[in-house]
Image (cartoon, rainbow, N blue to C red; front, side, top):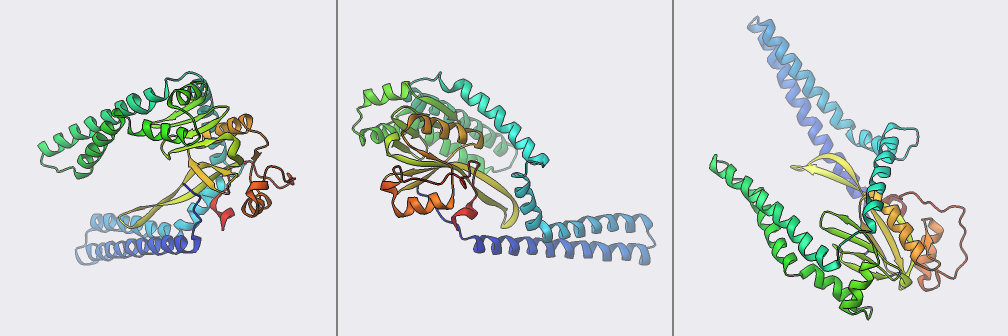
Length: 324
C-alpha cells in the first residue's frame, strides 16, 4: 500500500461544518428548554419545573459551546501527545514502554507461519463469529434485530473458512516466491524471524525479509533503503457528526525502486520493527527529514550511497503535515 497524501483543507472544512451544525442544534435545543423553563416559572408558577428546564438548557447550551470549540480542543489534545511536559505525553510513553516489553518477550517464541496464518487466525475469527451470532440470536429473541452483529458474525465466519483453507497463508507464500524463495525456505526464514502478533495480523523480521500479513507485504531487507515512524490523524464521525480525532501509527518503508510503503501497526511496535529492520539491513537510513524525503523522491536508487546530513533527522513519529 503506497503512502497517500492528505487534503488537509478539505478535511478541516468538513470537521468545522460538522461541529458547527452540532453546536447550532445543541444551542437551539437549549434555547427551547430555556423557553420551557420560563413558561413553567411565569405561567404555571412551578419553581421545580423552571429549575429542571433551566438545568437542561445549561447542559445543551454548554454542549453547543463545546461543539463550536471542538476542533481547537482536539488540536490541543493532539499537540499534548507530543509535548514532553504534558500528562498525555507521559501516559503515552508509559503505554509504549509496557507494550514494547510485551512484544519483545514474545518475539523469539512463535509457531510456524502456517500455524499462525491458518489455525490461529481461524480460531480468532471463529470465536468472534460464534460470539456475534449468539448475541444476534438473543437480540432477535427479545424482539431486536441486530443487523450489525449479524453481518459481523457472517463476515467473521467467511474469514474463518478463508483462514482454515489457507488463503492468507498462500498469499504470503506467493510473496516469498516472487523473491525466488520456495515454500520450505519461506517457513525456515519465518522460523528464524522475530515475530510480533496483533490480533490476526502478523509482522516478522528476519535477516532477509520483512513480512506484514494483513497488507500483505513480503519485502526483501536488501531492497529497503529508508525507514521511519509516522502517523495519520483520523477524524471519527458518528451519524455524520464529528466525534473526535484518533492517531493511526505505522512504519513507512522506502524501497530502492522508489516505492514508499506505509505499514500500520501499534505505536509501541513501530520502533521495534524499525530497529529490527535497520539491524538486519545494510546502510538503511532511519528517521525522517525534508532533505531525506527530497533525496528519496529524486534518486531512490542512489539513496543508500548518497551522503546525508543527520542534523535535522526526526526519529519520533512524524505526522501527515510533513507530507503536504
